Image (cartoon, rainbow, N blue to C red; front, side, top):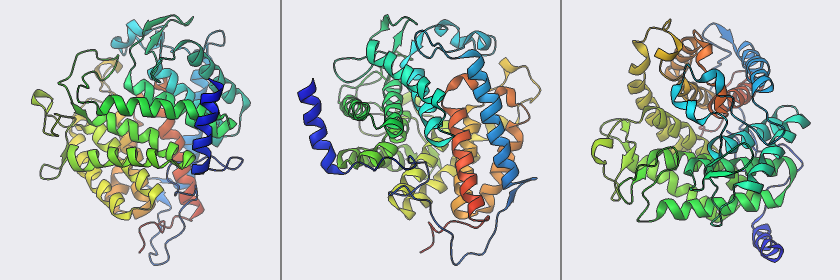
Length: 424
C-alpha cells in the first residue's frame, strides 16, 4: 500500500497541486482562486435586493448559519462515539420516507457531513471543533465503508456494520467532494489520493455501456447505458474544486464531459427545459421523459461555477439563459400552494435553495433585472416558512448559506458594482 501511494503521489505532484496555507478555493473564484474584479465600463450599482441591503442580507444568512443550522446540529446530530449520525427522529412526521433510515449511516449523508464541516472550517472561522467532526467522519468511513474498487458501501449501522455494500453514486460523489475539502483544511495527501481514486472508479462505472443502477436509494434497474442529469451535475459539483486543487488534466477532461452532457444533451433548447433521463443514444427515455426543474436550475449554476473557474464567458451566459428558462417552468410547483398548509402537505423546500443560488450568482456577474426580481421573489416566498428548510440535509441548506454569504461578501467588497467577468 505504501509503495502504491508513493507512486500515486509521484505522478500527482508534478501536475501542480494548488498551494496550501492560504484560503481554500471558494465557489465563484477563478482558476487561481482569486475573486473577479469590478467592471470598468458598467456603472450600475446593486446595493440592495428587495427591501434589504446587501449587508442586511449577509447578516441574516450568517445568523441563520450560526444559530439555526449549526445550533440544530450541535443539539441533535453529532455522534462522537461512532461518527456523524442523522437526526431523523424529529423529521419522521414531516418526511415519512426517511423513517426507515433513522439511526443508519449512509455515504449519501456521511460524505455531505465531511464536506460541510470541512468547508465550515476552511471558510468560516477555522473552528477546531468543525475540523474534528470532519476528521471523525473521515475516520469512520475509512475504517468501515471502503470497497475494493474505490467506491464506498452505501449503508452501515452506527457501529460500522455494512448493511448495503453496493455503492450509492451520489454517496461516492459526496465522499470525494468531502475528502477534497478536507485535504484543503489539513494537507492530508492520502485524503486527496482517496478522493481521486473514487472519482476514477465512479467515472468508469457511469460510462460503462451496461450501467443500470443509479444507487442504493433506488435499486430499480435502469435501461443499460441510461444517462441521468443528476449524475452529471453532482459529479461536476465534485470535480470543480478537485480540478482546482489537483491541477489534474484528467479531472478537467471528466468535468468537460459532464458539462457537455448537461448543456448539449439534457438541455432541450427548442422546449426550454432540461430532461432528467436519456437513453444510451442521448434520446429522451420513455416515461422518464420529464422536466427536471430542481436538477435543471441546479445544473445551471454549477455550470456557471465551472465557467467562472475556467474563464468561459460564453458558457456562463448560456447556462444563465438555460437556468432562467427552467426557473420559469419550475415556479408553477410553488405559485399555487397554500403557504400555511401543514408541514407534511408542502413540497420540499430544497429546490428553493438552488433557485436562490442561481439567481444570486447571476446578479453578481450581470446585474440582470430578471435575476434581481426572481431572487427577491423566491427569497420572500421561502422565508414565509423557514421551518421548511431541511436542516438534516447536510448539503442544500448549508451550501446555500455558505455560498450566499460568500457571494454577498464579494458584492459588498465591490460596493454593489457588477464584476468584470463578463466585460470584454
